[in-house]
Image (cartoon, rainbow, N blue to C red; front, side, top):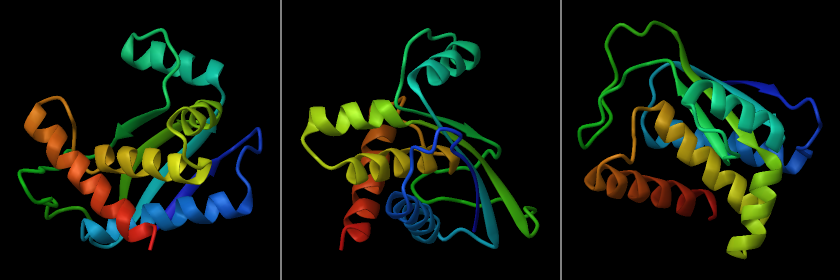
Length: 154
């Protein structure tokens, strides 16, 4: 697994970075990812994520995390990897708004580490082909998130 990290404002401390690496690794392991996978993770402030959200989704507001998958992967019940991926799989990009994660951790009454791990798992599942547009898909995605987070928090 390779994580291309960009944190120009030095939001992340060493402990949080290790937790992020663990949660990405656990998500890939949980989904039985073949070969080596690469994920790009950019940590931004509220202004930056609002700009990105507006540019790519035409939504002019701050959000917590954005996912930009590079692969089309079927998730009909169980993740199905394409056969012709090669050795280095570029899954896509995650853009996380650190100040928004701080706000949400306070709002939901849990630690910043737990909120960041939740957002990373959520985003990784999007990179792996899951979504929550339909109610049935949302249930499946939430179940996966919970299973992964429970294993991480042990």
